Length: 420
Ligand SMILES: [Zn+2]
Image (cartoon, rainbow, N blue to C red):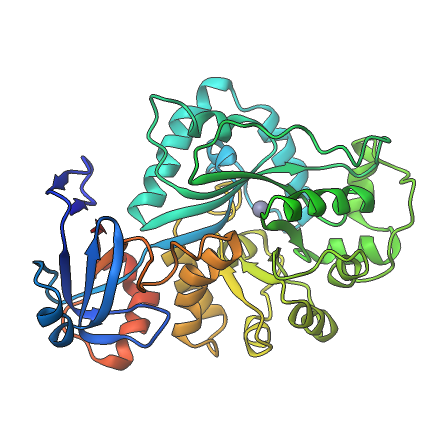
């Protein structure tokens, strides 16, 4: 068993591989209700049993690790981040206009000096680790993160996927030729493509990206219905987004805009299925929610980024009530001051008080693992999954408070990332 402490030096205690039994006041598997006085049996990096300690103790003559009044739960999944934007922390302020923020972001990103990336990315990685995040769906336009994560001298701690994001409002004839993927990521950090948004990628390019991801068994993420400006533009080709495209030399377009909502547009293009991850979905109506539910598409909520940009609040209770799978993302430090899924959970709970804490915690764990296609290994505590989980000190608390505690105070009690 290795125990990675949260201390700044990340002390690591190693002992030989063998059968271990982790017992604690609570085990929250996510795939089933919380277990009081629970236990997780691990062997050679895999979970081999989860249940009440009284049942597992006789079955597993193992080395016992007693976590006391803690909650053992799955490590967190950040389904949507942009690590390459980490140097922009505190550099952009919300202006009240989404398009003004996009304009400021493009300018600020172009001014990042090469030497700024490494310290900012290292700090961002450390912050995510200290907040219990084990996997990311990271999006970037540059090669910074693939190169960084595959460096021999760097320790890349995350599973998940790097998505090379394409922005292509006007196709140039080579639209069906997705660039050659970089073959430099490790076996547990995959590479795929994402589309920026329905307003910034031409329809034939959207289809080509989805086709590439589909043929490689990868999820297809896209920012969807983030702002009112996006709705205005797709409905009638007007508003601040049209001005921005003009400024950047992407106007006029050589295709018709859909005169439909972003969600309806993606449905018409045949891009929505259970492997599509719709990021944000703030500006969605009842029809959009029906479409998302019918197609099985996942919605990745980024509540703190939405609040920062003032774009509104996603109708989370309605999305959940319709059975749409939910995941959680921090987005980047250009629209957030923290890279913490615990902070996103607490924020979501305040913004959507009707959403049960079970659903919120599921979004930050299993929902994210499903969205990124890594649920065979991560996202819940069950037989066959990776023996990597969080120990959150809670003190003695009752059954109805366990998930409330994780959602509201999980970060405060977060101790070790346990690797059994
Ligand atoms: Zn984003």
